[in-house]
Length: 130
Image (cartoon, rainbow, N blue to C red; front, side, top):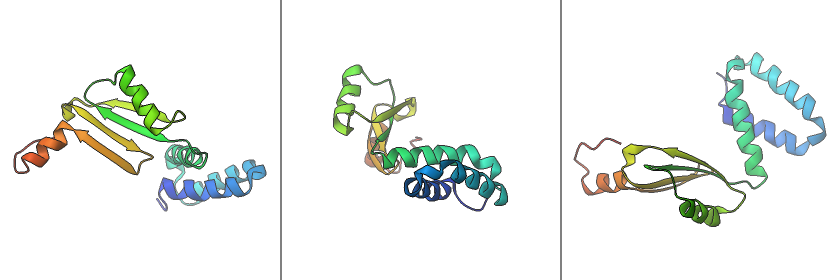
């Protein structure tokens, strides 16, 4: 592995934005670069990273929501109202967080309002597993 998928994605996205009419040639160049660098098997991760970069460039908000139980329709609507109607929300259920919610926006901003985190803060020396 020569570069992380995010590095390939950032470079490719910048080129696609600058030269949109050269999409086919840029894709060919990306594949050749992945093969030359020995990263051919990481192509799916690179493609996923490119997809995220292009969405971010287009102003799409990616939100990952982790909760102990599925969000209610009202909570889902409130979240969508807070972060925007064009948001793409992926929801994961993790019973280990006990209650509350963890929201990660564009892989950079995290709001952790989980019961597990609060218990860890209250009892830092207890052997709580999350």
